[in-house]
Image (cartoon, rainbow, N blue to C red):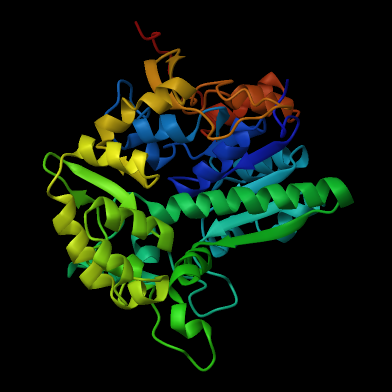
Length: 405
């Protein structure tokens, strides 16, 4: 069975992480995503170890199920070819600043003149109504702007970013969600529209959902910041031989733990008897808890927590995660064959469908320009037209490569 987005065609001008992640979600669900790249290719192709030039691990994990076409959009013929692709597309997605699209002659008015029903989705840093409209945005800048390093500083004393591109990933998912909704609206009404998905606002909403806290009220009933989540003691607990990640939240869970730890007196301690008291005394509670946890092994704690119905997991390293038995049982990690890059490890969708079944690995991440001639022919270009564009270096195809052994 086809995926739920089977028959949807998306012209994808995005690069690096956020945009390609968004379009890969839709590609995994069946959409025909045409990745339009400049002659030098998406820069993410060059990041990390690789067997072939331009086929690094981030490209391989962000661009499966897409087709790649090279177009030099700075040349008039390249712009015209892009607009020809738009005529047969349901959506166009980009993640440069809108001002850059206007300079290329690919603003919303120009694009909808060729396809009034197109969903024109821009995923970039800042909403265009505010003073930051023209600023560039990268993951680290957005993390800093919404206070993530400052929150880390309150916990550890040192400001730091998340250890992965959390803003790119979250905003990529947010863009996929919004684009899906716009495509549903288009299908229901026949109407296209311009859609703006912005990193700063999306991440500000995420952070403030947790940390408005006392300032959710007007006038404020307290300071901003959820104390439990920014406590310096909120971290994996050291055991005799490793670390355990454990969460006690309800009154009943704390009572069971106090009993198991031989401290029934704490169950009636006014500081810890209910959630309000524990929130006011987070530091003292977590300090005591850290001391208790250090007295037993990881296996002993996990067995005890299972017995008294407390949520807990051992702290995995990346290598532990790759060997996790649950992921193995669910087939989440899969070995796939790439025609030029050999055997690759890939993740599957984190969802299961009883009806439409996405074919998650319809095609591997493409070589640069691998589908240029194919896509241009679908847009009405003849073989002679395509040869002329290649001669003018408006388009291109990958050099011949040997298949991986």
